[in-house]
Structures are given as structure tokens and as C-alpha cells.
Length: 122
Image (cartoon, rainbow, N blue to C red; front, top):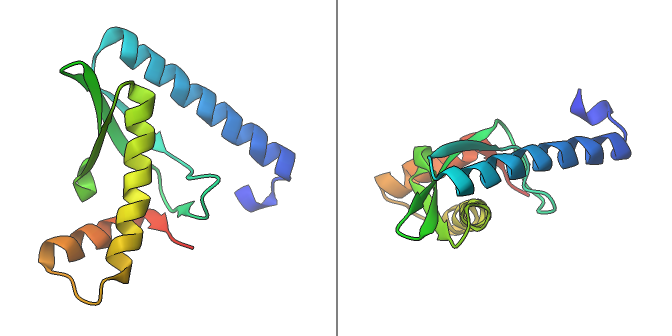
């Protein structure tokens, strides 16, 4: 159904989702409590989210950590937003890197499977 939306409608939907996520990140930064945020898009990157990706963001020792626990991917940043964006970028980098490998061990193979379950690459 999302494909039936016009480009302006799709942009408005992405902007609304971004505003909601930004609000949740700001609340996290002021309250310091762990917060779960979902990734719904990697725009402008050419990747598609197959299903919402749950990311936990929390304050830790003066910075913020973001985790995608299912694939054991985590990143940090000075703000919750930076950590969230860093974990998104790391997921895509990891997906690209693991996809190019001719042979993977069981742990990396499992991580790649989880990433492919959530992300459709270009």
C-alpha cells in the first residue's frame, strides 16, 4: 500500500516519522532512561526496511549507546541521535561487508541472516 502513495505523501510520512523519532531521542537525552526506537527507513541510502528494526538507545558514561540486539550491532555517539544514526550506518556497512565475504563462520553467518531478515540491500 505504501507504493500507492504519491512522492509528496511519502515524504510527508517520512518527515512525520522522523519528527516522532527525534522527539523520542530528545526525551531520552533529557531523562537518561533506555528507550526503544524503530528504524523504518535508511533513506537516502538504497536499502529497504523489510520490517521495523528495534534499536535500544541509552546513556552510558557521558555518551550514548545504541544497540540492535538481534544482530549484536552497537555504536556510540555524543548524543542519542548520533548513536542512533551510527548504529544505522554500521548495520548497512556490516551487511555490505558480510555479503561480500566468500565464506563465513557460524556467528557471522547468523549475523548476516538476521540483517537480511530486516534489510533488503541494493
